[in-house]
Image (cartoon, rainbow, N blue to C red; front, side, top):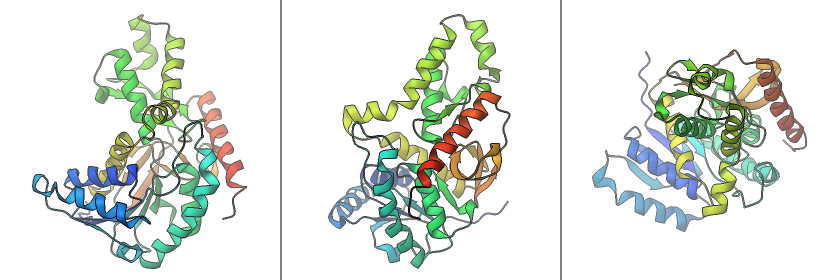
Length: 316
């Protein structure tokens, strides 16, 4: 196994998601240098100061506020900058505002670093991952979106609560768009290797289809509810980003539902979507062709085609 060491990560955007991501990476002990970049330098300075005051409690890591030139030497550049999703606003509503922002960000990054992995977190993440891929000119394996890694975690958590088992023993995926057309892959869901259909047949504690629909709706609408309650989501997504970084840093070849460019898989091309994907040192190592039911494939294609319609309206 190649033991390349990931030493430096740059986080662009010192808002809720970016600063919390820097915090989770600081706690991870995996990174030796973290650069935080934001147009609001005062905010970035405050975040860096706050993080550094916790340094006696963690493994040594150099954290500082930088400029785009400080992307030099970064192994991973995480983009978490852009307009925030407001209450009542869908992720797609954000697309034109954040596409304009990304044109500036990506062009600035590639001036100083054309050999890193670009990890997109800003919403709508699938479209902005595609925008980043097109603007950067990077190989498709080196442009990754956080995709439905968080949605999948929400799905597993809610299934674990429903079945009253540890979430780590629930295996399930949300695929497609990170948003309103996302697809629960019920055919792949299992608890300790027991397919959900069989588990439900033996359980008899609920009305199966009604409960499944409620769980899916709760996953799909989770961000809207959190934004309504507290204004923004950031803890869980920062942990999801840390998980992706960890898979890259440790060359784990972990299977995560990150967003990346599809090239014929499931009948979809020239669009970024989330499906189970092997993630390692090179970014996207392999997109898996998992055995979905026909209705799930059709919903996945609908999700991809919905995004492609929006992509076609963008000036990229």
